[in-house]
Image (cartoon, rainbow, N blue to C red; front, side, top):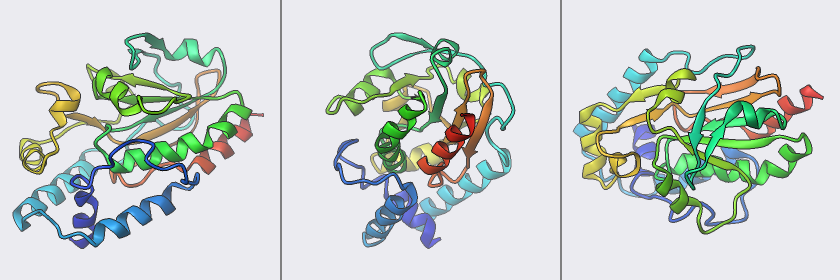
Length: 242
């Protein structure tokens, strides 16, 4: 229960901006653990009943998606999605240029997503050594993505999965239950404000390293949203291509 309190207090202690610091290393876990340590010092705003709702939702998701994500060796489903500026981006067209690191994240409101994205940004020079680009997919609206990244030039594409079809194709899709939505909204986290009215769908956070032929050569997906693929593991996969 203590771990659950630490995880969810992050929703109240939202990071003010994506690039609030330039000192992050490419090690996601160490930065995540620092964040959890700081969060644990704060008094939990949630009641026991609210904690139970969040814990049960987490358990239900783990049962519903015991092995989320398409697997190594599978061909990555092609798709076309709008970026933050409304421009259409097609995965197969991007793969014609070189390998792609495809990362699904929940939204700008998620502190663990932000920590992971900073780590990925720091690792981009290594990705580029392998002629690889980073592409992000999120259910949040393009204007929210534009707002998230407007303060800093980024060297990756941010795409909006507005009908959830790509999340479904990659076996990451789930819908938040009404009780969980109500708890989050009560504490200032309105997922619909980011995704659009009536849309409480999210992806299990997932990362896929895809070679030029469209095959997944490495992946990571976990219903425990604080677990993410380390940039070092992505780089190791890219090195195996050459």
